[in-house]
Image (cartoon, rainbow, N blue to C red):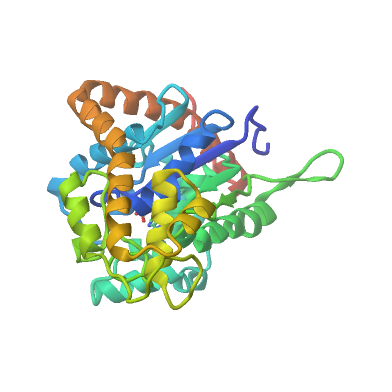
Length: 349
Ligand code: AMP
Ligand code: TRP
């Protein structure tokens, strides 16, 4: 039996609960999730199993998981429209990961850019989990027969890997044939959804590096929970250049491109309007405008976040409901893969 065809196309995505989410996570990923809720069958998980692939603080993991879930809701994920859950609460994620591990060539993993970058940072302390990270991510996606996976640009290679595992390693080897001789896939092959705008938000202190949770310099990112004063301070200190006027697309001026892009998105005016309005504006006039736009864009998120955190019982109940729904879908897919790979069926009693 192949993947069932859902009435609406399915979407799955997730963010790691590794510290405060920043503008890149929001503009590159979560903002796009919100738009998909009404047209798609949407699943959003907090990928806590991914968060332990680098050394983590056990005293912080649960709290960060709740914070991340509350931020999803604060950013506009509607628990009535989407399934919001915690990855480790649905054990088929780990189990499918193992099955996929056994068919994924080691050299596919060794060439992942993110692995190489993170491995350098870990020195001698690289876990097998860090290498395996993209296989777990493939399991996350494939368990839900996702059609679309909205992510930032940095996840493109991981999405390609998930597609290759599904197509070449599972469907090609373990798929069946129907009565007409047509091949029946075991897993749905997902497509990435990477929107151009916001897909790569860069660091405030270096326009050639992406904004990242793991940058030791906190001034390099604006988190979704930064108070207005802190946002003001960070933007004031953000790297600029000596040129007058802001512009898009000049490779010599990555900071101008990045900050103007942030202004276009957070002010809601769009790229053309801001490019025209800021074409001859100096940095001194631009930065306070950008600050106000970012503060105003984050204000409703921060207000809703505070509400969800006050109503922790409600938040936990969203996650319980999400877990039940997600488990139902995930278990069925896992069973399909187990059967295709030839496992003895589990006794039903
Ligand atoms: P992570 O913080 O690695 O868990 O990433 C969660 C989501 O945010 C993924 O979809 C990433 O592609 C996206 N993302 C992370 N950093 C950025 C960035 N600087 N610009 C745009 N998207 C990003
Ligand atoms: N690897 C993703 C990131 O760092 C997070 C992630 C894990 C994910 N599982 C996923 C994203 C499944 C989309 C779908 O950004």
